[in-house]
Image (cartoon, rainbow, N blue to C red; front, top):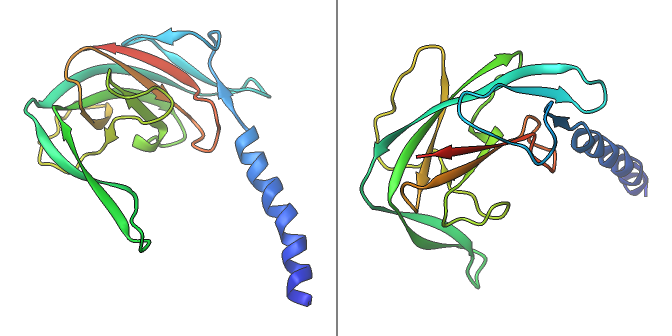
Length: 176
């Protein structure tokens, strides 16, 4: 009985903490439907206080691997509850470079990338793929590596400052 009461008291607290994280969203200085381009400064702003957390700029793209390869990706579970896999063919591995001035350290979890094969908002391209590639180095810049099913063409990159927020902070279009 005591455990049940503790759980009932802890549940609302946990939900309010989670809601607080999701509610603490960020925006940019541009309207919500604005699409940024390469080398365009993106000021990351707290939606409530209007405090600027930092400035992001996607600075370039480099092709690391330009030949088809297959990857086994998890595709749900089989009848026994074990992971089921499917073979996915990718055509290209690219590295996207960016700069960020702010206290928070960004990583690939702050980004999602869509090529012409992927449905925006549903299934992004594979970040940090497993096949061999040699990443490029650009001093003073950070990067993320992405496997694309459709080589070339435009890419849409979404950036989300707080990984728990529902809507992305900014959208960036990159022409390859």
